[in-house]
Image (tube, rainbow, N blue to C red; front, side, top):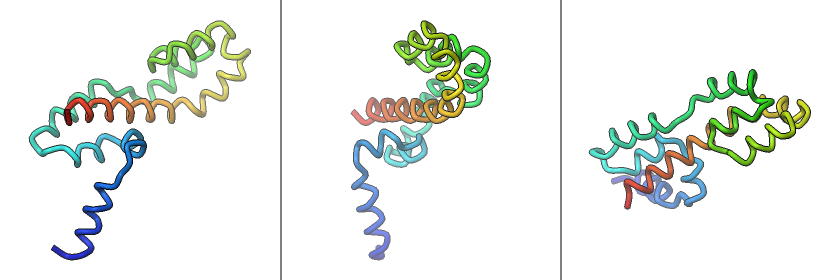
Length: 119
């Protein structure tokens, strides 16, 4: 094995837990045995939220906090509901942030599934 392959293998083992939490399902799947990968991908697909769908929900129902309820963020959903989207300001800002929040939640979900399979 060449030195560059050994170094890249060492680097892949040095990924911190916080980086793994933000990693996508493809990065996490590479760390699993090949026979567990199809089940991992199936579980991730079932649990994942589509960022575009969440954006559409946010566009039409974001002022009532429905987008945050769909993502499982009940406290933020209630705050948006009671303030009517922060009088529209929070709703407008959330239009730009909701897709990134959805991707973060999907990454956290994939990490949770990865940890369950790893144990």
